[in-house]
Length: 330
Figure 1 (cartoon, rainbow, N blue to C red):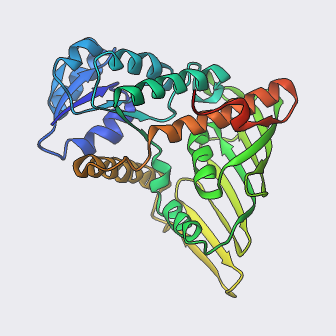
Figure 2: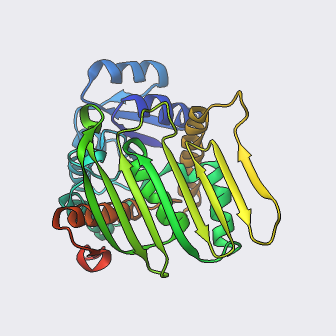
Figure 3: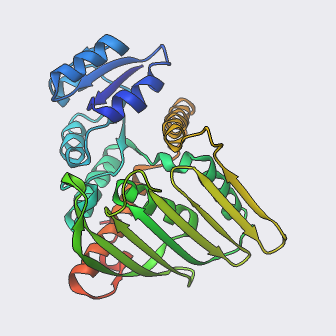
């Protein structure tokens, strides 16, 4: 199968191509704005280089991975859709013209337009929310899906913006859908470069009647835990965080706290790398079997829907009813 690779930065070279190249029946077609990087990919993983989406589509790739920075996703995917590709896979977040720490309302509207167009053309779309493939995430989801913990009463997330879209996705996946949000911006911008941003704190009411809070920030150093989460359910409490490093589960029907944590010789960054492998292999298996992707791209649209509501609330000082003000469908 011919595989389109758009973008040859660190995430492509370190996380996607090593996994994809193990499938010896894959032939790579690269599109990248940095010639030196893409030439190194050809040398290491094989394949050919093209200069435009139109030229890539002449090779009829069965899959296309859009692995550029998030500010390029919309324009690249829009150009590819002119040629009716079979499948598009987006690295997260789905779309953010000003970077993932600065999502705005228009990012949601543009992404919705893009995915609706893909649906109309019958183009399969998926997104790489690889945090869902951490062992801690899968363990929590199994408990939640089996109703072993009951309904969510309260959730609280502290998140470095480097993990922001991932953690919003985890919040929805493990806790359920929020109904309305009220958000405030901090008055100090933290961080450097594209990640320099104001804190964003949010309180919300969940569809099931529960409540939750999320704080996004660039104020915490990257050598500290990147996120910490608490999920309080009817039948127990779960805490977890920092790239699959630890989860604690306390159930009301037990006198014990179940703890799963990395060994002292382990590293969250190894877990991070392995989560990409699990995510990619799960996606490839779904393609091979003709099944829906494990994480459809519309999950990325839901994440942007939530962020758009946060930004509107912070700007207006008023609560926002998420689905009423940012409907997912036309």
